[in-house]
Length: 417
Image (cartoon, rainbow, N blue to C red):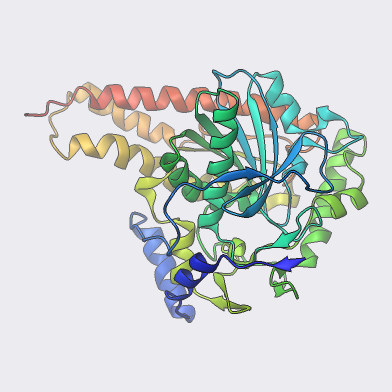
């Protein structure tokens, strides 16, 4: 493979780099936990909408897949059209994975994958794979960032939405490390003219650098990407457990390993190591990573619901997803809906004030969080894939009703003109 750099973007990012010790890391994370409302500027990236083109001579594609380029970066895509009046559901894979885990492979049972069950409910589906070291890509992009990731997904969603006459509303399903895309794809979707109505965490981690401890070292491969082979052993354990729960092999492991997995750009490990790529090296840079993830831009963040598994094998997400994403749920409602009104007047009817407090409590009560039987891959296999889509429909309705109730309560505030 050829190593490609994102020249202008990479140069702009490198200019902001600083190395930090543990004291700086602790101080920054403490600030996030206590305040949670600061906004960091993004690293130096091109601000225009990304262009999308199709690569006609791409090799190794599955039926229905297309290899697109977004601003010259290869983007493996799979689109399946549904009801044009319903949202386009975009699946964003986690670390080291292609989106093939959500739509399947030749010879597989389509009922084992999310794309099939979303189609049964009328949703259009898009699997958008970021560039990895998998052989389906002809180049590697070691300087690819989370800002780039968000722009890539938004550009591809816009491309298929326009091409197929869809409504322009999208729901993003981010799995695992795909949680890091929540803010960047929301910002990019707005810039692209899309309506991102919901971010659905599928056992995902919020875009907070260093929130997780990496299970083993993440090293630099010869092509400039980050490698962590110890993760593959963990993935295999998850996959085999899901096979057992479903009573059959969903995808043979050798197929999974060779056609789904691959090394990734170092910036996409932000939740475990806050680093950027510069001059062939990984450079620790917490400030840059905070800006790249956008995790502190709580006023420019999508509304979030979460779906988690229930197995000890994925104890991290089973125990922490609700709390980890709760700050984004409540801040979205308060700062984007409630505060703009109450900052002008506190003249609200007591009954409506009580209703507002009740609704805000409800927002973080667990009502916007669901569970599906299974581990970190609970949505993989017919049993979990079907129920995940059912839970998505339920959470989507609850979110809409909650926002409507809060808007109705603050609409009664008397504001002098």
